[in-house]
Structure formats: structure tokens, C-alpha cells
Image 1 (spheres, helix red, strand yellow):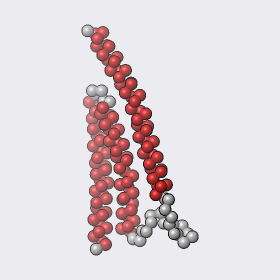
Image 2 (spheres, rainbow, N blue to C red; image 1 turned 180 degrees about the vertical axis):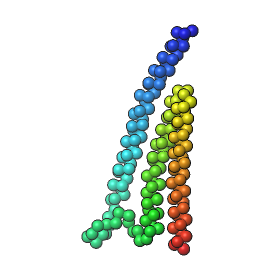
Image 3 (cartoon, rainbow, N blue to C red; image 1 turned 135 degrees about the horizontal axis):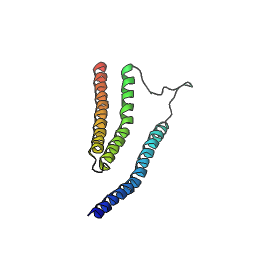
Image 4 (tube, helix red, strand yellow; image 1 turned 30 degrees about the vertical axis):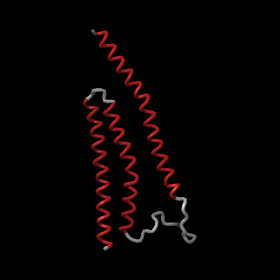
Length: 139
């Protein structure tokens, strides 16, 4: 009986090691893909030409007042935070999957996902509030 239990425990340790060999390269690919998108997308968007009259161009585009500036900054934050939120949700899911029956590790994964959703919801609420304020002052 004890030798069977030892065999089961040994198999589960090997299975955990083998799954980690699969998971870490997958996480590296996600991180590399996200970073390349953050680098390549602005380069692709910079392909259009702006007429700056021989001087420095405004990197924010046609920003004439403070409401346009705040709206552009919040849009940038929403765009930047979306892949980060997805990555954190995936990380929390991996924490839950590889908890291996440990309730503390499972709870850590749940908290990671919960806090990510709360943070992204706060960013989206801020985006909505700035849109409401911008529309209020423009009318």
C-alpha cells in the first residue's frame, strides 16, 4: 500500500515538472508577443505623415483643450491595460491550475484574477467618466 502511494506521489511530481516545461515556454511566448505588439503597433501607426511646418509635431495630435488631452490619455491607458489584464488573468488561471490541491495557491490565483478584473473595471469606469465629462463640457 505504501509503495503504491509513493508511486502515485512520484508520478504526480513528474507530471507537475512536465507540465511546467510546457507552461513556461508558453508564458514566454505570450510575453514576447505582447511586447512586440506594444513596439510594432506604434511604429505602424507612425507611418502616416504629419505636416508640422518644419517644426516639431505634437505627439498627441490635434489636442486643443484639456478635455481632448484627458480623453487621449485615458484612451491610451485603456489600450495599454487590455493586454496586461489578459496576461494577468491567464497568470491567475495558471496559478489555479497548478495549485496541485493546495488551497492557498488556488486562493492566490483567484485573488489575482479578482484584482485584475477590479483594476480593469476601474480603468473602464474612468474612461466612461471622462467621456461623460467631455460630452458635458462640449455641449
